[in-house]
Length: 324
Image (cartoon, rainbow, N blue to C red; front, top):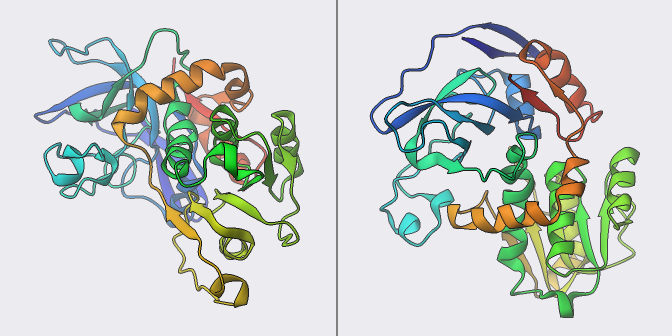
C-alpha cells in the first residue's frame, strides 16, 4: 500500500509500506479521509517513526466482524475500558494506556491501517465523508472543552467570550459556543482570512495582544505562550481561562498584579470522551452548512507534501487527504 513518510526538516515523501496485519482485537480499516491537523506540524519538522495522521475516517474491511463494511471514525486514544478513568467515562484519559493512533502507532496518511476495536466510532449515514473527520478534533475537542467549563460560566451570566486562535479548533470552539447559547463571541488571530471566516459566522474581531477588554470566559486555541499569558491577565475575577490549544514548549508564567490579585479558574482539557460522540454528531447535524465552509480542499496522497506545506503556511483551514 501507499503511505506518507515524514522525514523531518519539512520533508514528506510517498512510498510503499507493508499492508497492516490486524492483531487480536483489531480490524483493518480502508481509509477514505484523513484531515490535516496543526499538531502534525511538529512531526513535519522532527520526523516520525510511524505514519502520522490522526483525524481518520474509513470503512472497516474485516469479514466476519460486526462492523465489516461500516463507515467508522478512529477514536485516537487507545484505552483499556476497565481502569478508574475509563469506568468513569473518561476514555480519553485512560490510566493504563498512553498510545495515540497516528502518534505512537501508525495513522491515517496511508491507504490502510489496523485499528483497535474499541477505537471504532460508527458514523451515521447522513454524515457525508467530507464532514466525518470534523467530528474528532474540530468538533469533539472544541465542544468537549466548552461543555466542561459551561457550569462555571453559564451563557446567561457570562457576557462576552474571547476565542484566541481561529484555526480549525478555534472556529470549532466558536460554533460550539454559539450553539450552546453564548451570543457575544470575540475572536483573535494573526491571519486576516481566518478572522474574516470567524466574522462570517457572527464573531467579532479582537486585536491580538489587546488587553483593554476583559472577559468572563477565554477559550485559548492557539497554544501560543503570549495568548495564554494574556488570557491570565484579562480574564475577569471568577472567570475561566480554558487551554485547548497545545504547545510542547515550556510555558514560563510571569506572575504580576493582574494575575495575583484575583480568583479565577485556569482549565486544561484533552480530546473528548467517547460518551460525547452522540452530542458531537447532533452538533454537526445542526451546523452542517458552517462546517462545510471549513473543508477547503480535498486531494490525493501524492499531493500531501505540497498541501501540508500550504496548510502549515495558513493558506488552508481544514484540508482533507482523500482516497477513492
